[in-house]
Image 1: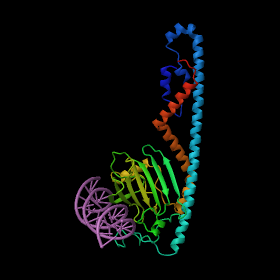
Image 2: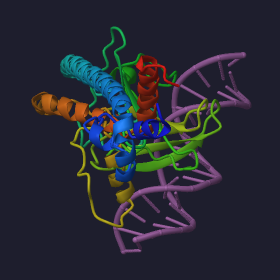
Image 3: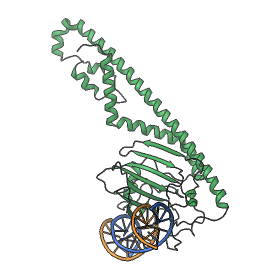
Image 4: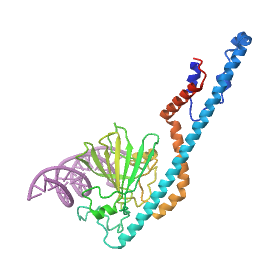
Length: 335
DNA sequence: CGCGTTTGACCAGCGC
DNA sequence: GCGCTGGTCAAACGCG
């Protein structure tokens, strides 16, 4: 196993190019061939055969790995589909509950603490809050881990019981809380979680349990949208931003690419890096479209995963390492 | 000038 | 009742 051969293997990718035996096994310079051709021909034939056998093994390994990856992607897509189905079912059930409870009468006040009649109070404009009631029986949590180009995003959507002491019981029923974990650059001090929506920051506070400040955002895309977002760096891992969403959007995701130069460009640009939008309310209308597009989405997701994996140098290095080790195991011990 | 962010003050719930 | 704490308000400020 010569060094050049091994160096050649460092370029291994999922699309291993094993169809270059002639080039790589290429004979030495022509003059040398003329000198050694007769003398070395028999021995070289053996070497070529051995190398070709190794190549075949590598090819087999490559195929196996590719199959494994395909199977993995297929399983992931399948699981993703099941998760989507569960989410849709849960959302449908919750919407049902919302209808039944809101018919009962008193709509909860949008303001938890004060009955102010400030200009921001949108209760009048939004007589039936779009918030879906959380499933009271048993928490429902979904965690999806996707590795986009830059950020690792883990989204956990939870219908949680009253976690906050301050939140009244009825509010608990009416608010769906979701958490989004975003891997952020530690040097980036901004508490901006890029999720494709437009947020307006209305406050910042240092909390007791975390030295990092917590930022409070409101959805600024639709005045009637009462979704709130809290963003705070994780106390354990400062590179992780924890975005807590309260409520659900009652509007579609804003257009991704907007005007240039505006501050919104940062959010718009963020859309590119964020493959998974935040937990959006799955209203019946959106739900149907989501179901219609789920197959395509899953396919896109699988393709994205495959592309991400193939572009990930770490994955590539690990694959090369595994392949090299396997090849060294299988290859005749000529060293 | 309009819009978004910053930041200190205020409010309300909770525990003691 | 008091203090602590989280959440919110709104004036001041900055930026395009």
